[in-house]
Length: 232
Image (cartoon, rainbow, N blue to C red; front, side, top):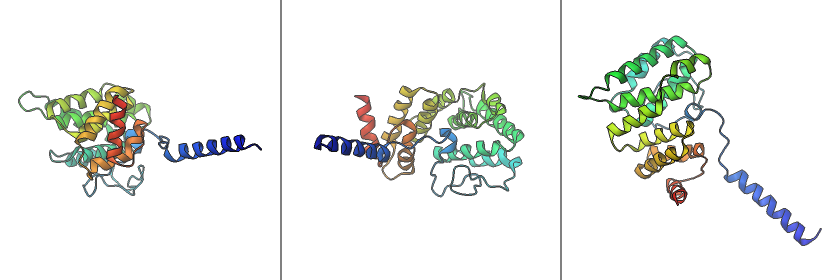
């Protein structure tokens, strides 16, 4: 075998290895459901393990609406809200009636929050984010329940009312990407990365979830660099 052929084979093998090692992992399922958010020691709905689907077997779904709303307090960070609503959507698969109750109560809370005298952007966010997450759990009933809601518009409105919020920008980036609005998603992702503090939970979640945006980065700095390069 000639030296040129050997060289070509070696290069091909090295490229293959590089693609395998550095390519983003394949998306294993619905992005808003199958990729848990790291919320540190913050309290959320009961969970049975560390995997995305490890719902607690003995959890009483009749308590789902009340338990979820009790966790969505005004001081609960957006990341905690995202993980809580992700778990709520998974539990909702077990009990369609519990899903309807939670959806209805989130909707009622969001509608009352639209008051011009005292708008509540977090209530708007919760309804919009749950609708988009719940839409991703399989079943015709889930699609029918969330069909009337444009979750991204609700989150967009929440951002306008709340002002700069890097965690909410991250949520908006995910929802917009899922909807196929990749250009808009990237703008939200830029804002999220710019507002994330080094070493924060948001920074960690941005790095662990960046493959959902077809990116790969081991650090927040590397992610920011890629986002800057994409804008050029």
